[in-house]
Amino acid sequence: MSAQGNPQVSYAFLKKTSLFRGTTEAELPTLIGCIAPSYRDFAKNEIILHQGEDITSVGMVLSGRVQIIEEDFWGNRNIIADIWPGDIFGESYAFLPGELLRVSAVADEASAVMLVDARHMLEICSSACRFHTRLVQNILAESAKKNLALTRKLSHMSKRSTREKLLSYLSGQSLAAGSDLFKIPFNRQQLADYLCVDRSAMSNELCKMRDEGMLTFDKSSFQLKSEIVI
Amino acid sequence: MSAQGNPQVSYAFLKKTSLFRGTTEAELPTLIGCIAPSYRDFAKNEIILHQGEDITSVGMVLSGRVQIIEEDFWGNRNIIADIWPGDIFGESYAFLPGELLRVSAVADEASAVMLVDARHMLEICSSACRFHTRLVQNILAESAKKNLALTRKLSHMSKRSTREKLLSYLSGQSLAAGSDLFKIPFNRQQLADYLCVDRSAMSNELCKMRDEGMLTFDKSSFQLKSEIVI
DNA sequence: ACAAGTATGTTGGAAATACAACAATCATAC
DNA sequence: GTATGATTGTTGTATTTCCAACATACTTGT
Image (cartoon, rainbow over all chains, first blue to last red; front, side, top):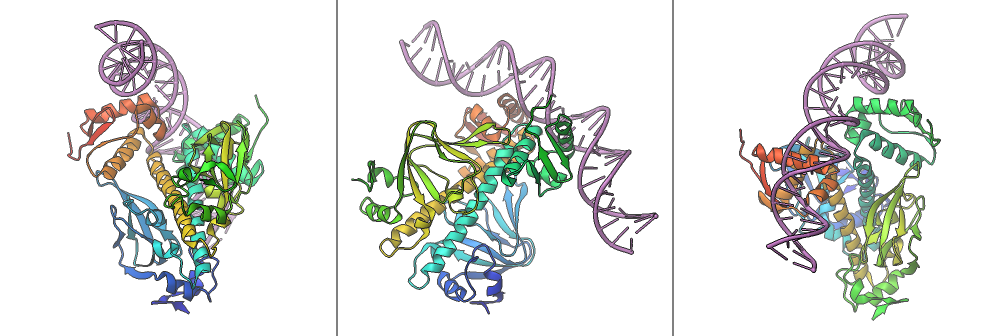
């Protein structure tokens, strides 16, 4: 089985995406027919969404890879994100009519994209309300998830020093794990990149904190110490 | 006219809130009846939502003021946000069942709060689908707006130096204004707080950039220079 | 076991930032 | 007009961070 109007996309693929998660292959044809997505192919380096545009559609990568790029006043380009098959993009702008894109979406390689009009998602139709609800729920969940991730990262980054950034991050990981002992999903370089600090300086700071008795670690395993150590 | 079950809240107030924006006073009774919010009063310093809880409701402040507070592993408290009447909170968590609150909500003064179950918002009922759609649209828009604001701030903060942070911010303001000449909504201290840098160091850097011919400014008015100056 | 590559820790000098303190300018109220 | 307070710019010093370079593990494939 394949999605209406695009024989390259299988329902098996779609039902696993963040957008269609929770729907069955049996329901998908009705839902797809109802939200009437459009399909477009892009060549490598072709621009999918232009900075300054006012979009009303949510994009989903079906194959290939899409990069979100920001260009500043002086023309400096900056890669913001990589979007892989099954992931959506433009959802923050699509539901805010009048909000102009501050970024561009570019096909990093030959890519196929599904575009769903935001109004089609919200609009009620008699035949598929149940599926609509699921769709809206999914997109709200995606937005909420992104929100939490951004808020968390920002709460670490708003700390002034490397030490404070580390403590904020490690404290959060510990509370999330519900234990003073936990593993982090990063190696040192990735953690430094995430916290926007220098790796060697961060490594240095970690060791100082260890020597001061605030924590211990081994590779990606950490343990925070609550006792006051002198 | 007042909202069902809570004589202190007027429909005139509600229809202006981010949640109910776009509905008329005539529609509100039906919608309110359908989503069945609960109303609660909190004394000053009373905890509305506890860190670690799994919430399914979105909160809206009706009167008073609510603070979002984060407590880290060592018990250090950190104020994340102030929520004023008409503003909502908890919306990122309410739509993610199983996601435990990493923050607490505390009444900063005696406050009245409306709590709306997330499922009631998404759920379709025969009588008020049109209003439901509006509600979902509003909450999606709120989430999307927050998302954009967070993404923007993060894109500035992820820059390593004060100068780069400033350029990122000012470039964004210029592009948003659609002009090289624009006003920013901050004074120096507020801008420094927003970018998480020292005010005097930032002020210093701004003047250096001005002396190097990259920009000019007067109070909160800025002008970026695209010409290459030697 | 060995080699090659990766990850982590360590160091020293250069550069940037924070901090404190103060000067100059602007805004406001009286 | 003057006094008061707030905002902005300036400077010097202490501290922190960055950067580059290297040492030491640890991993992986052969």
